[in-house]
Image 1 (cartoon, rainbow, N blue to C red):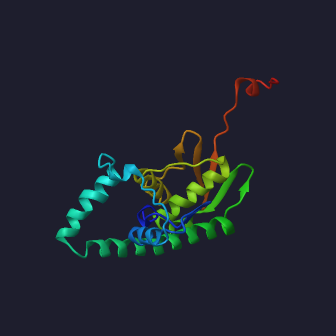
Image 2 (image 1 turned 45 degrees about the vertical axis):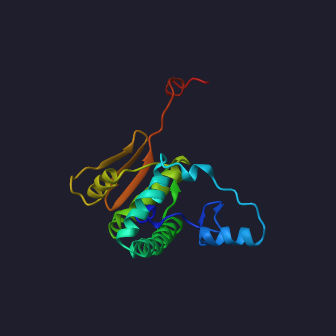
Image 3 (image 1 turned 90 degrees about the horizontal axis):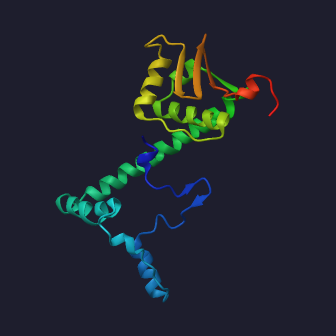
Length: 193
């Protein structure tokens, strides 16, 4: 999705990369000019590591055939970064303004979800799961496609299962996201643990 294709972010949660926009050759030049010791990660030259094989062999081969390739990729990444910022803003605004946890479930207006992109829906559901379970969840493209079909009433199902403990239920124009509560035998029998 666009968030993955936006490249390495300058800021992600508590991680900051203040030098991300400076080219390596400029950093090397600065280090030499200022008599700083340069420390090169020795694994960067190991082409058995896929990222290095791409960087050291595949990309130079492609660039030798298409001189504009690097700029084209950078342009696409920059466009995706803009799209990514919009998606993140839309999702965060929706979560902050529309989502409330009540009695261990979250209620969402289905029509509002239907106006959103699949990526926005994916991240809204992921954030709702984080609100409910305080854990992250992974969704494949297929899983999100199935969920969007479910939202669109393609299969007329009332329930949708995200995983063994996370479900949604359609009621009128509302989507209820909830977690299945797992009870131990002792709890089920009203025994004290």
